[in-house]
Structures are given as structure tokens and as C-alpha cells.
Image: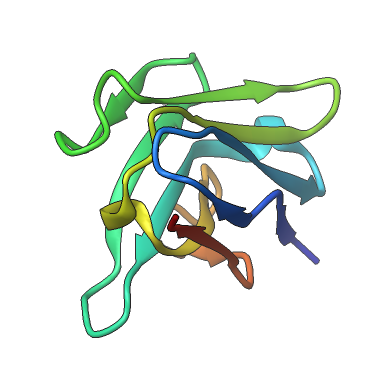
Length: 118
């Protein structure tokens, strides 16, 4: 059973930093892509960052230069380093993965709340 578990959310002041973690049960190499999405109140869920199994990355324009996605295969964990946080980054952040074997299926974690406020 594949499970994704996020951690690292919290309350931070504008300009601050947080690092989110997504722990993967199962084999990380089975995932073709891993990503972070977020959903703010009253808004649709949106892609924030994505990393492929060969470490190619892509980011939403709104976070380019501030957020960095990375993966540690030994730890079976995907990270999202968030710097220069803004109030508009406030959302529930979800880890997402797609495996090679069933690529059209999305695997999701339960989410972690990030609140940017003074």
C-alpha cells in the first residue's frame, strides 16, 4: 500500500522559511514524478512544484526563485524548501506522486497547513 505523509507545516511570519517533508512508504524509485500542490480557502488546488525521477524540476511562476523541491532517495522523502514566504502562500500543502506502473493514478497525502501571517 502506497502512502504519502507530509510534515513541516506551521505558522511563519512574512519573509520567513519553512521546509516541508513528504515521507513515502514503498519504493521511491517507483515514482515517475513527485510534486507539491496547495489549496487556499475558496480556491482550486494548484501545482506548486514537481520533480521527476531523473531530478528535472518545474515550478509555478508564483514560487520560482523562492521554493525548491528536492528528493532524498535514501530517506524516501521529498522536500519543499520555502523561502521568502508571503501571506498569499498560505494554504494546505499536499504531496502528490505518480508511479510508472499506474501513471494516470494520483497518490496524495493528507496535507499540512502553512500559514504566513504577522
